[in-house]
Every structure is written in C-alpha cells, then in structure tokens.
Image 1 (cartoon, one colour):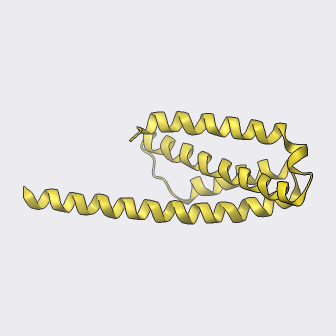
Image 2 (cartoon, rainbow, N blue to C red):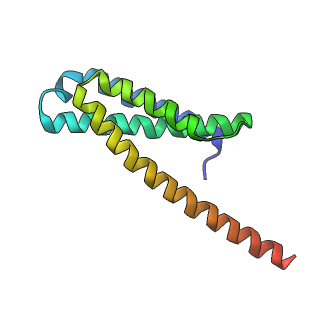
Length: 125
C-alpha cells in the first residue's frame, strides 16, 4: 500500500489535472445534457481526490479527521462544478453523495478487517 505522503502527492496531482481538464473543456461540458452530467461526475471526482488529499494531510500532521474534511472537499467540488454549468452543481452533489457512501462502506470493512487481524494476533501472544 502507498504511504500517506505519496498518496497525498498523487491525489493533489490528480486534483490539479482533473480541474485543469474540466476548465479547458468547460464549453464542451456545458453544450448538452449528457455532457453536463459528465461535468458533474468529473466534479465529484474532484471531491474524491480532494477528500483523499485532506485525509492524508490530516493523518500526516496528526490531526483528527471528520466531517470538516468532507464539507471542505464538497464545497470546493461544488464551486468547481458551478464554473461549468448550474446543473453540474446538482449532479456533482448527487455523485459525491454516492461516492461518499461507497468510501464509507469500504473504510468500514477495512477497519473491521484490521480489527479482526489485531484480535487474532493479540490472542496468539
């Protein structure tokens, strides 16, 4: 697995690339209904990589992660979506909610797997 430092760097680079491409193709993304939905999806990807960046940053400096990171990442993604089209804001919010649900589910299963491994190892000692 990647360390928090390299994951933080990669997520920042992905954020920069996705935001740049979204702004370069802003006119195309606002040209039709399907592309507007795609613009909202790309903004929700911004949410995901920014949430990863903030989480890794907080882990690196030893701060407690929580809903503040989610709110900041969502606000930045919604602002980026608003530069494309009004409908992108709504689709970004909906896609981000779905991504947040999936990330929470994956995180919960990873934590429970880690806890069960810890219990097994402490039982052997």
